[in-house]
Length: 527
Image (cartoon, rainbow, N blue to C red; front, side):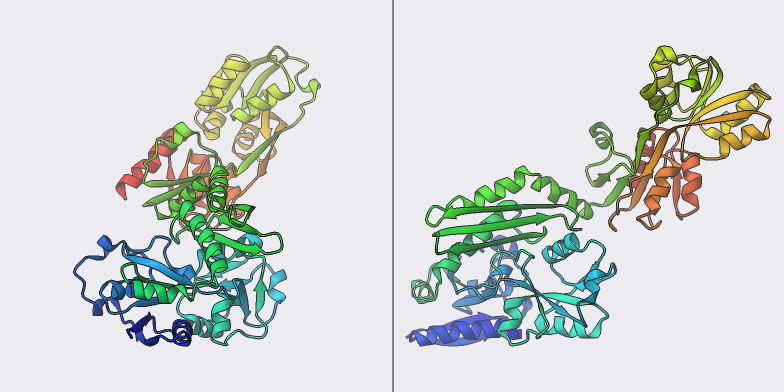
């Protein structure tokens, strides 16, 4: 009888799994031998790897050995196997699934759960994203290596805990007594299952392996892996999937999840189908996630892999985004939110001789309280070309405009010396204008027309540069983020605030969003 050569990696867990298959085959009367596989460099092939379609980092060497006819079967943790196998290799059997859950191995105790600075270790994007979604103030550090290596690293480092697959630790008897079952965390597709691969051309081996196949596990893991394949096909996105059979109701229950790598965004799906009528269960669930923005979510994360990535502290229009190269990652959010105040009618009851408006928000706040005909202003002074344009469209002619507050202050100090001026401003405004005017004998009547509220977002580490449009956007950004990136500023006032914190600050030639984007492009080309 042919001796079945069982290929395996050399880690303790891999050998345990291979020995389990060896034992089960021998109980059926087959002769077997284990063949530990060395590195790829020890194997000579007639074809290059890319022609074989080999992608799995943990399965590649075994695939090569099989195609090279050095082994008859290979034993894998199914969660590590790519959803598309190399040509000529098939899934010959899936053994009954063990514990599918993830577990947390603690360093000391559970007290850190309620604290903001917990540190967890894992090399899995899926585990990291789900942990950060549940504990957003914690940090997750990278942890790689075989099970024993990772357990040792946990002992040697000052972490609160590390996440493992329960099945791996349980199989080799190394699950600590205090380990916590993370039942809320959706496992990797096919986690806890062992897979046997073989050559499609070897009928003897396929017949032998077929006897080890556990049908229910195969059905469930096939659904999970199809869900993964339809969404993304590899291991570069945080995707979880778990299917199980409810024998009482004779149906398959499925739950899947896709997250952003930082865990801030999540799309989840749950669906059931009658056993035997489950053909489209994976497709339906994957389509649901895609329709909820799954592809866009993964594309956002891919920005990390771009040559250069920026974050705008104000939402950009699609036209503005198209001014940037496709090789650049772009993220944006409004770091400043505006709330218009109700301005008392008595403020504008009589004609006001001199008025200052320094932003478009000032214009909008006035129009929020009054109609154009009620605004009886003799001389309007403003800052910015776009503010001037908006005033002339919606209120009336502008007597004089300057690029920034400092230049307007210098102009008015000569033009209206000794007179009064009404300044419609925010609760957060720079002192430059009122201070200079007051020093030059001008009475400044400040009207708080709107409130500026900070709305910062935690910007991820891969971002190279941040676009700022006012001193307030700089202040808002610093509430949640370090000043360790390039600051691209719309004007000198914004740059002045940025220079207090950032090492590298660049200023646009014109006070427009497009000019800031042009500055970013120039910097990118130089890079």
